[in-house]
Each structure stands twice: as C-alpha cells, then as structure tokens.
Image (cartoon, rainbow, N blue to C red; front, side, top):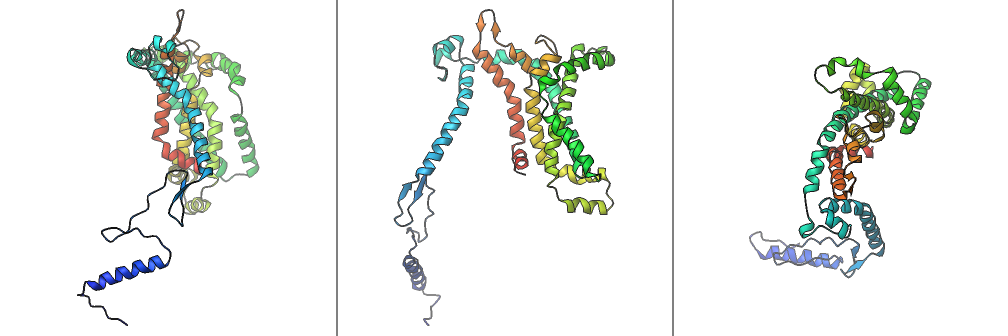
Amino acid sequence: MTEIDPTDDTSETTKTDDATTAAQADGGDIDARTDGGTTADADPAPGVTEDARGGRFQVDPSRVVLYAVLLLVTAFYLTPLESGVVTSFKTNTAVTQTFPFAPPLGDGFTTDKWATAFDMLGRGLLNSALYAIPATLLSGFLGSIAAYGLTQATWKRRYKAIFLALFVAGVFIPYQAVLVPLTEFWTNVVNLNDLLGFLWSSGIPESYANLIELSLTHVAYGIPVCTVLFRSYYKNMSEEMIESARLDGATLRRVYRRIVLPLSTPMFAVVLIYQFTQIWNDLLFALILVSSATSEAAPATLVLAGLGVDLSGTNFGLQMAGALLTALPTIAVYVMFSEEFSEGVAT
C-alpha cells in the first residue's frame, strides 16, 4: 500500500489523474476545463437529442411533429385574438384598407378607440361588477355548504342520492327553458320595485332592482354546478381527519368552519373563476331582466352588444376595443387565482 504525504502537492495531482483515467476507462465523457473541473452539459433544443456514443445531436422526428402541432394549435387559437388587438388600434381607414392581421403603422395607429370604449362602457363595467361579484361569492359558498351536507353529514344515503340527482338535473337546465318563468316570477310573484321602495326613496335609481334580480337569478342557477364540483372534492377528503374531529366533540358546523372550509381553497378558486366568467359574460338574462342598453343598470355585455353600430355603419375598431376591455376583469380573476385553480383542477 502506497503512503501519501499530505504536504506533497504531487499527491493531489496524482489522485486527480487517477480519477480521470478511471472515468475514461468506464466509458464516461468528461469535458476537460482549464480549472480542473467538469462542464455541465447544455440542454439541447426542443426536438433534438444527444447521441450517447458520439456526443452528436440528432433530431427526433416525433418531437418535431409534436412541437409543430402545438404551434399550429396555438396559432389557430390566438389568431382571432391577435386580429382583435391590432384592429382596436387602427383607424377606420386602416381597418378597411389593410389586412385584418396586419399591425397598425404610421397614421393608421390610434388609441382613440380604447378611450371611447372606456367612456361608453364605464358604467356598464361597474354595473356588471355590482351583481357579478356578490352572485359569484354567494353561489360558491352555498354550493360548498350543500356539498358538505351531501358528503359529510350523517343521514341516509338514499336521501342523499335524491338530492344529488336534483342538483345534477339543475346543471343541465338550459337558460332558454327558464326565460318565461323567470320573467313571470320577477314581475308577478316577487316585485322588487315594490318590496325595496325604501331604497329607491333614498335616491338609488329604481332600475337597479334589475341588478338584484340578475344577481339572485345567477345565484340560483349557479348553485347546482357549484354543489356538484364541491361534492367531488369533498368525497376525496380524509375521513379519518373528519372522524377525529367529531370524536373530539366538534359539531357539524365547527368541522366545516375549522377543517373543511380552510381545505377548500383550491376548489373555491375553480368555482369562483368558473362562476365569475359565466356571470360576467352572460347576455341572455341581461336582455330579459334589463332589456335596454340605455338603462342606468345596463351591464357591460348589454352595452357592448350595441357598441360601435349606428346608421353610418359598424365601427370595428371600437367594437374590438370594447370587447377586449370587457374581457380584462375575467383575465384578472384567472391570474389572481391561477395557482389555486391548477391545484383544484388536479384534485
């Protein structure tokens, strides 16, 4: 056995040379560096793999086809959006004289469309927020309560099945099927203009009763789908944890408030994004309950339907700017809850 003198610098050099020789004998690839270390391998480009024997890069045809398909699908999906964005920054002359997907250049560029759209949609955006936010929060919370009762509450399973069937049936009722009963209900059964007279006497426009009707209608229509989504989430929740809390004396309400509700954040993100998008973009109920874009309570979608249209023709740039401006709140909600949304969809 050879003894190595720690004061001798040649011993370290000898060990390094031995390690390098052993690695080469094993067939490994080591890139020599001037500082004595090894370099990290650079990541190959998408669709390119490294040949293990020769160190050469080879193109993987299956990956090239995969990335090409993804690029085509992305382009197919984003092309209308790109056309809408560039059109919103074009003058009327540029819209008619340039290719729809070409960007605005020179005198054809303008931001007046966005300023005009914001002025005309400002009240509508506020009205939409006034009924969409409460309706989203309330339908999500009530759906969570109903799903908790269907999964965690101790009552006979056959009764749960009946209520679950009713909730599932509510998901598939089309909007068009309830338009006439809805109008009859808010006109002849529950007339908010008469019931909330004290609000209108305080200076609030009486037409804002339509926003309350819209909000309550969307709550009723959203509870079934929220319940079904929350039920699928609660079915996978740990039964041992719930049972342990009950053995410790926690009531049904306390278990929900201290355990179930805090663990429901991912599914709440899914439900809130889905519900807010549905309610914010709804036009059919707004047409039935508000009916006029000139009303003080007209939501953004109702104002947007007639934006940029007059006897002289259609202002496509203004319509595109209004449509994109109306879509911004839904994009903002998704960005705020994107991480929780991904977690909730994966569970």
